[in-house]
Image (cartoon, rainbow, N blue to C red; front, side, top):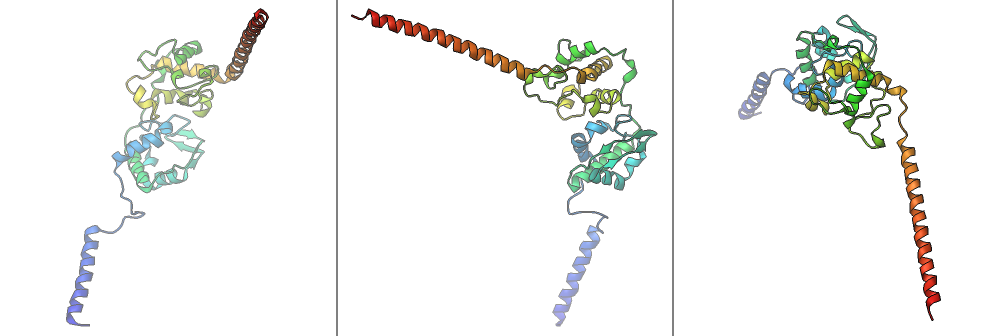
Amino acid sequence: MTRIAQFALVGFFALLGTAAFIQGPPAAGATATAIQPAEDGAQIFADNCAACHQAYGQGIPGTFPQLAGNPAATDPTFVESVIREGLSGPIEALGVAYNGTMPAVTLSDSEVAAVVAYVATLAQAPPVASSSGGAAGPPNSDRGHALFVGSTAFSNGGPACAACHVAGAVNGLGGPTLGPDLTHALDRFGGETGLVGWLSTPPSPVMTPIFSDKPLADQEIVDVVAFLAKAPDQAPTSNADFMTASGLAGAAVLFIGLAIASRGLRRTYVERLRSTP
């Protein structure tokens, strides 16, 4: 090997060493995808996690564990494993027992890293109350029905639930709705406490911008929950049967009208023939 080649080889390895020194050693578990900061995880959390754990990580006691002020949520390895693999109870978080199942969430590596970082910021914050609760009086399902269908307006100007949802006998004439059927909402959210907490700070991408500045009052929440508690026992009106009966009645009227008109035309034609010389 010539002296020039030797110098070139030494220079090449020196260049590699300098680049490695500048870049530093790869982090454990790092991938080729850039890691996003915690603030990038806020929206990912809102889209994928807040429906259960609530917008500020306050959770729903006995249903969805609280992340705010939860030391377990500061462990990035544990949080990442829960996101990727899910978690089943029984578990205990901040002295409250939970026995549900969280399914795995499908996110990219960078999204997982961003959510892990954001959850850590929630975990370092003090616990957040899940509902303002006790200021409300006894629940009234009739008032809840009126609020749900819109015959009584929400005090802060929010739209009626029936604008997007059906529940029990309130079935939107059988047409499509924007939101899910709430007939079994209590089962979905683990009972009245869970549903009260969810309605206190609805975290869905559709409801958040609508109700962020038009929150439901405590009494309105417990009344709507009381109505939804009775929804499974209220057999929905069979609009399919009503529409079928209406269609058949309309068809019968149409055919009768055509028959009468047809007879009138025949008589006119016969009379015309008889009057022809």
